[in-house]
Image 1 (cartoon, one colour):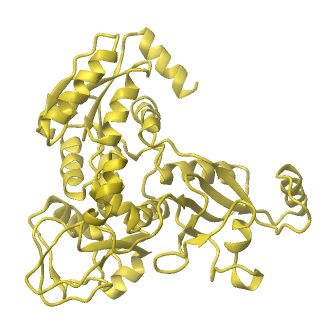
Image 2 (tube, rainbow, N blue to C red):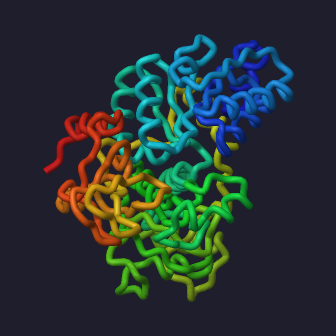
Length: 419
């Protein structure tokens, strides 16, 4: 039975999935609004650090909700998560430290967790998935985010017996490595979004984090630090994202990658060593004999938080995930300076003025002593002058061990030790 039909049954039985949404910004508000149209599901709680945002979302929700569903509102996430009106928690904050606290409280309160917070997932996801699974709870990324949309294509291809040689996304914004909230302010205002969020898009951190999450979920790795980020379209992307000896740019196949020119879509590039299957792919995808033996499967959209109810329903009804880590971290998004940092200067985190994220393998991070960008949280202070464009190590900065994300990352390192 499809998720939609399962939800119809719950609607008929008046057995609603009660959802808490933590973070009533752009994504959270959109999700809360959409749930008014989802059968068998209702909003049981809304939390935002700015209670007025939560109340605005609650008021709109209640103005559209025709069913009798009680919704609590608070600026305190613990009050909402612990509520009897909540079965499942959605983290729509995008902040690693906040996400770490939400995850810990959801676990303690025995509530499933759906993440619209890629940033915390790439920092402590291996540990949290393991702990939630051990507790009989679901820990999952959200359908509609690019990583989960790519996993759908990846699983689709693998279920047909095809080999996936590249998996990736189109980048929505031009890469501006030094972007910060000031340089983004005017555009962010025009788009009705946070300047910090737009800065994280433009400086590449969001793309790196998304492909990090994908890597940890399917086992493919970046071909090089930061990936290639080629300009391509549907006609030539399979040729460009091939190995060098076949005219492409890659040193290896089996990689995650982003492409300028395919946004807002996601893709996998597949092949088959079986000649009859290759011929069938060529025929069905309507390519001529000049086309190589790699083929692009493409989904031209991802619908963000509007798809999150699918993950919510699957978590509660089917105890299933949309995307989760395979186990130990496979890739990492590490901190690189956007500007010169002076000794004694406090560093801000994702989407700020000081650092951006760059993707590399977990092994490369360990070998070089680099710092996951999610740990640039709390009171992080430079020990010495640091040049622009430098990969940070703990020789450069003093991390904040009082933060929850630092503590949970330390637990993850203990649970998944690497050489």
